[in-house]
Length: 157
Image (cartoon, one colour):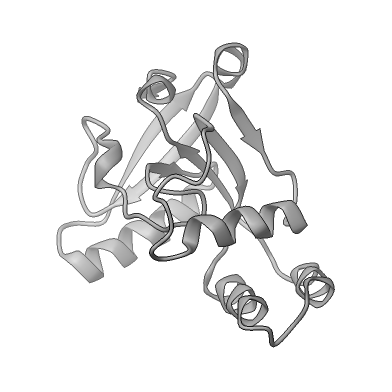
């Protein structure tokens, strides 16, 4: 079991995949992290933007069992495949779901990374430069749950 954290402005009792905002790194769904500090920061940011009380909800995730039954994509590092995947999912006006993975695990494209990606998309830097710049960034993790089947492997603590 892996302990995961979700930072929000309210306690999460039931996961509703449609409440996630579209055009995020891995698409619209439910995002968590292994890093409690990251979830705490996200909960404060969300409460500041939308009201409510900063709240971190904890879940146990049965990765081993899920791996046997679900379509899972793991990005070990912010490489070219990851960058293109994030760009496809963040593209406003594109199809909401650019992939068919149940779960995606990988680095977060924070504001600094999003800035680099925009520079690439606007032609200010090439892929080689983008990947070179990514080497110097500190990344945090995210677990993205995309399908009703995937959230069955999350158990609220």
